[in-house]
Length: 89
Figure (cartoon, rainbow, N blue to C red):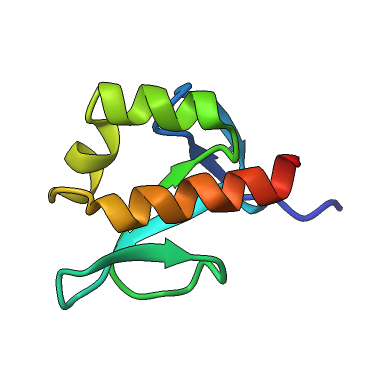
């Protein structure tokens, strides 16, 4: 029997994809927002495709902010952009 693959919804395109394909943004228990590459950091998490278009949509619709229930600092957005360029380029 095949193991079930965890699915998560991208905050940009709203598509459900395998958790491993997405980038996790987490608001930690201390209130700081950061990227979580291990997928295990404690706190409230939101997922986004490694696609700059999905990031633009998520920022425009404020989906990440709503999901994490806090403002997303510009340095976290910059870090996301760098990570996406690294995965695609």
